[in-house]
Image 1 (spheres, rainbow, N blue to C red):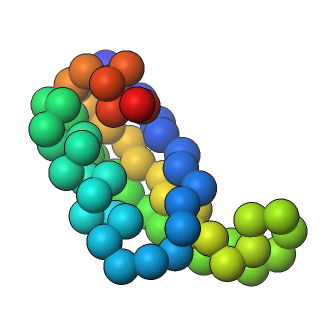
Image 2: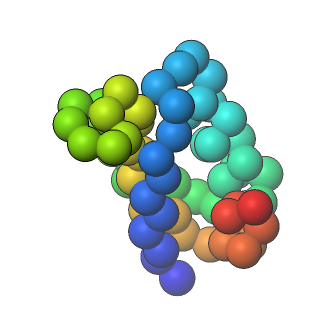
Length: 63
């Protein structure tokens, strides 16, 4: 089953690595990834990260 996951995170070195490691450790296969820097609003300066993930234990990825 393909699932979408959207995350708002701090914009710092290692965040993308940490997230992809968690997904892989829980058996997920990332089929699509996209990142943006949020420029306006309450989350300005943070990163918006979107993944499409196939397989794995989705509930454990969200912890």
